[in-house]
Length: 188
Image (cartoon, rainbow, N blue to C red; front, side, top):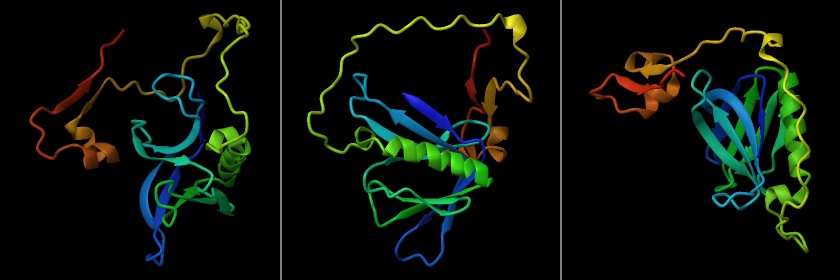
């Protein structure tokens, strides 16, 4: 599995043939996932694109990029594609910076240039079994050589009060929750 996380936020818009203008749906961090399909649960190779909520990393939206998605650049910081389940509906991504939009485009272009990644049938395509042993990774540096995280906030729980901060909590949780504590992580 290979994961690419954009360096900037993006707005996700949708547009149907009946819509005159783009409709803003979500704001989040674009993520591209190449699932190589080498597990029992996921045996099909595919490219997924998702929008993760800033602050919680909850998935706000996701879709599969296939051979009919037509992912393309429509402006310096605006990309479009078609939904995989309904190719008449368009999805637009408006990036905060042109540099990160270009980096995302370059990464997706590299992935879709390989026919195996977008589920195209190719002659002689067979599952490859791992034959070679992986070389030993380079030794990790000692912890004393690594700086502390910058601007890091350790979230150990999410409460009902946090619903004003996070879209997913406000929209996806029931309004009449009895218990205000949603989730508690144990410290290690």
